[in-house]
Amino acid sequence: MAVELSQKSFTPYTPKKGEEYMSARQRAHFRKLLEDLKGELSVEIDRTVHTMQDEATIFADPNDRASQESDMALELRNRDRERKLIKKIDETIGRIDANEYGYCESCGIEIGLKRLEARPTATLCIDCKTLDELREKQVAK
Ligand SMILES: [Zn+2]
Image 1 (cartoon, rainbow, N blue to C red):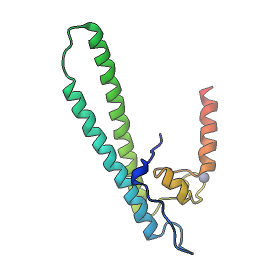
Image 2 (cartoon, rainbow, N blue to C red; image 1 turned 135 degrees about the vertical axis):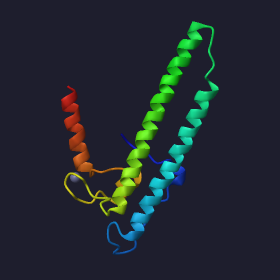
Image 3 (cartoon, rainbow, N blue to C red; image 1 turned 120 degrees about the vertical axis):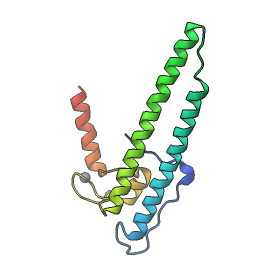
Image 4 (cartoon, rainbow, N blue to C red; image 1 turned 120 degrees about the horizontal axis):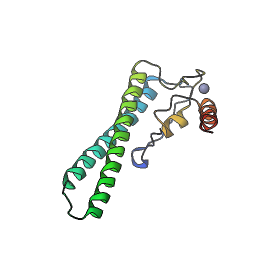
């Protein structure tokens, strides 16, 4: 499950010369990225709830009813997805607070600022992620 940042809120981080990885300034930067992302998702969820309330009309035509039901199912799936993402963002903020953020959960190396900016909730370095995906593909076969 990927969390992608919308481009508008994105200001790339430029570390100072010799700045250590995951300095207080960097942690603050990623914390803000994650909080902005969470804010955007919360707006989405509110919007979805309103759409569902607006559409809670009973159609006489069974075809209309069927398409309304599948719309609702889709909305519910989106909402579920958004909720999970928010949970993941909260967990990630917890990792920042615990000073665990930015290191690969599998091998312990630095995930890297670029990768984290593209995917702020990433918990694996690119190598471990690639291996992980390869393994998933093999299981799916
Ligand atoms: Zn790794």
